[in-house]
Amino acid sequence: MTKKQVSEVVTIFLAAYPNLRALGKKVLDGLEAVWVPMLADIPLEVGQLAAQQVLTEQTIPAFPAIGRIRQAAARIMLGKVPTAIEAWAQVDRATSKFSDNEARKAYDALSAFSPIAARVIVMMGWFDLYWGMRGERYGLLRHEFMVAYDKEVERQTGFLAMLPQVRQRIGVEPLPAPQKAIEAAQGDAG
Image (tube, rainbow, N blue to C red; front, side, top):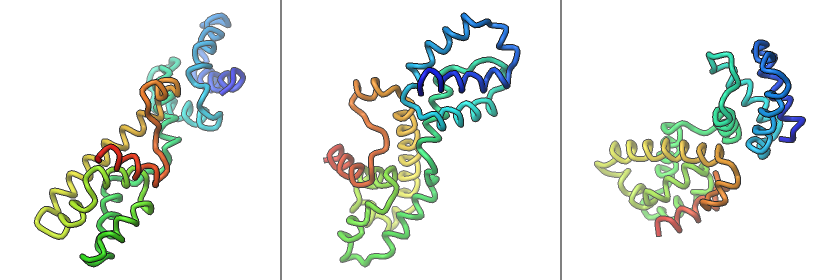
């Protein structure tokens, strides 16, 4: 967001909490000076929605921490992510479509999964998962998948909430496209 756009987000909080105007122009200008570089990578529409979301969650009439706005923006940018049980149902359906001698075709279908699910599947080992689901380990694999999936959603949300320069410094990119997620996971697991 630009300085003008950050001002629009600050205005949302001022409208909700008129008592904050008592801080004075100098303090509000200083606030904007800090917020602009911290929110520069967030699109205006996402920033406005994030501010509104923070307002619905906040119980103290004060400006929120920048991290709260970035976390809300990250959840918005991540979009609709299947729940762990929904992602597991996709895995279950995908593996049941193929016969035992078609396991390779099932693996090739990974790009049809959400990037997070594809990454978790590859990290767990597709063939171990595929064959394990056909035996006594089904319940254990479901549990392990769901725990890993929830952690990966949390991890991806955290990556999105990070400042771009921090992501660059530590060498991470949030939520790659499905094929890139598969390749990255294969590289990590291999």
